[in-house]
Image (cartoon, rainbow, N blue to C red):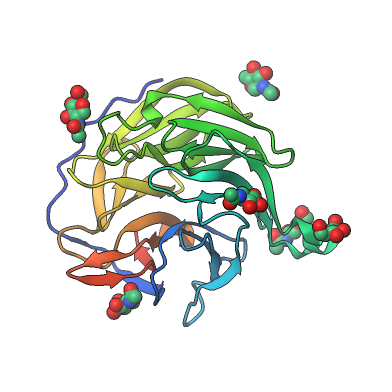
Length: 316
Ligand SMILES: *[C@@H]1O[C@H](CO)[C@@H](O)[C@H](O)[C@H]1NC(C)=O
Ligand SMILES: *[C@@H]1O[C@H](CO)[C@@H](O)[C@H](O)[C@H]1NC(C)=O
Ligand SMILES: *[C@@H]1O[C@H](CO)[C@@H](O)[C@H](O)[C@H]1NC(C)=O
Ligand SMILES: *[C@@H]1O[C@H](CO)[C@@H](O)[C@H](O)[C@H]1NC(C)=O
Ligand SMILES: *[C@@H]1O[C@H](CO)[C@@H](O)[C@H](O)[C@H]1NC(C)=O
Ligand SMILES: *[C@@H]1O[C@H](CO)[C@@H](O)[C@H](O)[C@H]1NC(C)=O
């Protein structure tokens, strides 16, 4: 089955005003890259600031990000996926200009049951990927959650890593995952998630939101289907999440969250225009049965003021 390539509806230039609440922002500059919701409802936040991982309780009256782990040998951590009960895989490396070195897949285990049995399971470097250039989004295979797919924004591929053995292979390499040779920002695949039988991804340089079908063991079958194409020049798509029906909510790096319907239609949920409610959104986490989402941001300079990374709740 092929989805029709839908021409996106023209986005309005004015701001969209969903109800928002800033839950937390860092006071010194911290660029939040991605996150995940823990079984206890807390958020884990991956950052570019010395590869620090934070945890934050969004339901606390005054949420504060607390440092929970650092990763030996990494200056930046990016994608994160759940690989077991309160256990995660995280991609990290030494950040350079669109080129990382020492790209590594780590695991971290917050489950006290398993931690008490073997304290050394807490943070482990399970796989080194010497050929990787820029690991970005990550997703676990729903049927085999200890296996993760990680996108490489520069190589235009998906690596498949067995976090139990460290074995890593290139699962898929395709133009749809890479940036065009003449791209001003050479970032191809960025956000990555599995939903149903598909792996969905954004491609920043191509401005696409697309999917490809995978088997339960992560073998890609079928063709890449482009669901939506970004129509605003100078903007780009980052990480995203799904509502229960498959509606996607994508972080659009200037200042917007965009809802992409199953038919590929696009609508700005919040941000746009000169709104600075969200400064550089990087990831979206749908919560409360789809009624709201936690959005992370990387911050940035607006009207000469440097804003730090935020966590903002947005009503959907
Ligand atoms: C690479 O990462 C490993 C941990 O995975 C660390 O021990 C090592 O020091 C790092 N190397 C460099 C050059 O940063
Ligand atoms: C910890 O792991 C055990 C065994 O896998 C599981 O039953 C339990 O729910 C986990 N706890 C949390 C907090 O995820
Ligand atoms: C944990 O790691 C330390 C240091 O490498 C080692 O001495 C110790 O035996 C390990 N403990 C277990 C339970 O594996
Ligand atoms: C890149 O090349 C394509 C194909 O030649 C062209 O359509 C596009 O405008 C170019 N983009 C940039 C940013 O130069
Ligand atoms: C993965 O699934 C495909 C298709 O079902 C099958 O051909 C292949 O043998 C499987 N590979 C492994 C390693 O199980
Ligand atoms: C944190 O958020 C407050 C409220 O929006 C804002 O006034 C302040 O400038 C922000 N600080 C940083 C460092 O981003």
